Structures are given as structure tokens and as C-alpha cells.
Length: 496
Image (cartoon, rainbow, N blue to C red; front, side, top):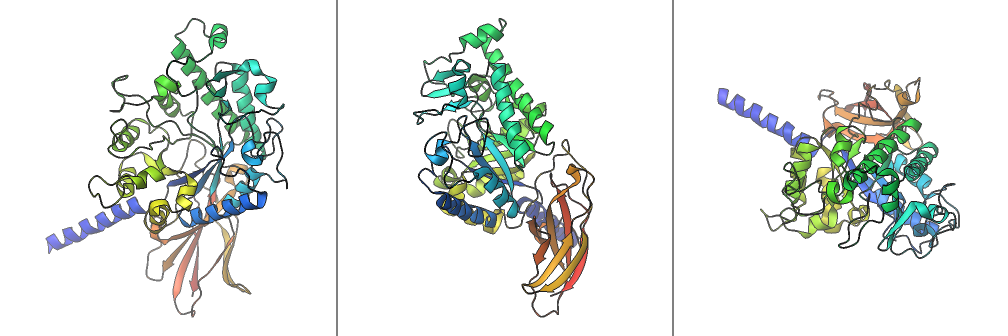
């Protein structure tokens, strides 16, 4: 009898652990929507909106809860800016406004929030011109201040060694955060340029002015360090709830360069891009970190298994999310089971290792197109239930009041559960979303039971699945503030 009881307890515990791994209550589930590949070139406004709508609808169904939207590629803007010209990736020619006129960033904010998703404005800070850009608008920063930029191969770069550039980029970020209801400000992996063999970075003038005789590599790293700290402070000075995140290259340092580095052999953030990511995380200068671990399990130079374990162990002072490459994941076979791809093995690592709170998919369209059935797997298994965003108590940890006046009402559209927002004394207390749970009559109300979380919505109503009015259910609605701190639940019993 005792053995049977112990076995039952063990099975129940295993079930809870499995449920926590497959259905965590809080998890960042992001996807990058990029402009730099020119996927919208030549599309009309209506065609671009139709494609984005298609992607967002599918991503929502696949459980994605955050979109990282590239709105500044090369000192330009996919939004209405007084500081930088319209992007050629939107209109075909830099400086030319869209016609018919629209603001893609504003449109994306509204569309994502309507689907219960966060929208993070993704900018590239230092890149002033990419390889394919043949002409810059007269209003472009590099045209107005060519002495503050340098050329590197086919690129033009805002010189990170100049304080004026750091200040200008922070002004761009503050402008975005002040005028748009974004949930995050996101930067990618381009700092000092990716090195080309035999090509030196032409920053002699900046070094002569500001280097003060320091080792040039240390000086470059300090330039980027100052920028990261200043950019985070700039974002939070405008709206303290807006998250500041970074997505660095997947290798911090190799063991051959640093004893505590990863057992890898590839380009390094610290040594080659002058990006001291661990310092930013450990000092709390960023609110989240998404290293791009795009390689397959078993890669000889940069093994996914090795890298995800390394980041889990070393970079946990701030939430760690994993940058996943959809196409490479489904391309390579599982080393233990060659009949399937590596998605299951990668997610098993992501959800079993400590200090990892989600992932971000590169790239959104590959998920929306269900490449290798990746989106199907998210929808039917890994994201089977909704998830709240990971908590960020250093920004805010006070939960809002609970929803008021939860009431079911018959309408022309059916049986609708309505509720009212709680009162708020300051912006950080304001409710931004709601979580809705449902429990059958004999089930204990437990807001940690993720199987019963059925919706995360910006609406103050939910249509109920009425049948014959004979079965009793308990609905619980909680309020979520800007950082998705969750209120106590407001309950309502309903017969459906």
C-alpha cells in the first residue's frame, strides 16, 4: 500500500513538473519581424498590411506573445520621425514618405495589443548605411554629420567612440518611446562592425580625441558600455515600464580567450564586437538578454547544447531568453532520433535548464509559414496554453487591483462576460491586459494551474461558450499592469 502511495505521489509530481515544462505560466514567446531583408519592397500599403495581418493572426494562434518589429534599419525610420528619414525598406527610396500615408510602427502597436501581444520597437543603433543602399536622404544623420561616421567595407557606421553619436541615438530611442505605446525598446547584435580579415576599423580620430592612451580594445568596449547604460537610462526616463533588451551574437568568449568562456570556436562578442554582454546583464543595464544561439546541436564550432548551458550558467542577473533559428532547427536531424528534427531536443534544453524564461524565433515569417511544422508544434504542444510575460520586479513589482463588476450578460452576439478595470493612482498601476481562467464545478480554483488559463486579452469582455445552461463553471479574471504583475482574481460562477 505504501509503495502504491509513493508511486502515486511520484507520478503526480512528475506530471506537475512536465506541465511546468510544457505549459509555464510565465514565458517570453517572441518573434522577430525584420525589414532589412527587403521583404516589403514593392508592396503597396494594403498588401503590406495584409501580409502583416496574416502573420500576426497565425503567430497569435501559435502562442507568440511578443513581436520585435524592426523599425530603424540604418539611421532611418519605419515610423513618422522628425529626426530621421523614412526608410527605403518601406517606400523604396530613403526619405520618401509612404503613399497612401501610414505609420507602420503605430499600426503594429495597435494590432499587437489587440491580440494580447507586446510590441518591442527594434532598432539598430550604429548602422548608418547597409551594402545595398546607394543613396542617403539629405536629412540623414550621416549626410549632415559625415565626420561622425566611418566606412567599413560596404557599411557606414555611427562611430561608437563619439559622445555625440551616443547622445543622438538615445534621442531617437526617447522619441520612439515617448510617442508610441511600445512595451520594449530592442537592439540587435551590431555594435562595432563584424570584422573583415585585413580591414582595420578607421577610428583613429576618435581614439586620439578620447582614448587617453588606454588599450584600444578596452576603450572600444567602454564606448559600447557607456552607450548601453545611457540607452537604458534614456528609455526608463521617459517611461519606466518600457523594457530595454538586447540580442547579442551567440558566443560571449571562447575558452581559448578566457578560461570561463564556452567550449566553442567562433567570433566573440567581447573580443571582436567589443560587446561586454555579461557586464550589461550583471550590472542590470538591460532588462532582458536574447543571445542568438542559431546553430544546431552538434555544430563543431558552436554547439547549441554547449552554448545554451553556458548562457544559463553565466547570464542570469536578468531574464535570459534564447534566440532560436527556425530554419536551421528543422533542417538538422535530432542526434538521438534521426527521424525527427532538433526542435524537441532544443526545447527540452530551454525548458529544463535554470534561469531561462523563454525564447524568440528568428524569424516570424518562418513560423507563420509553418516551416518544418515548427508553428504547428508551437500551437499544439509548446504553446498550448497562453503565457504571461516574465516578471521584472526591478522595474515594478506592485500588482494592480482586481477587476470589478464581473458580470455575464446576454447580448445579440451571445452570452458575454463583462468586467470593469480597477482604479489606478499612477501609470504603473494602470491595467493593460487581463488574464481569464475557467474551472469546472468540482475543480479547485488555482491560478497556477496553467491548463485553465484560456485567454490574455486587452478587452474587458469575453464571449462564453454557451451550450444548454446545465453545466456550472467558475470564471476568474485577473488584471495585468504594464509589466504583467497580476492582481488577485475576481470570480464569477456561470452555467453554460
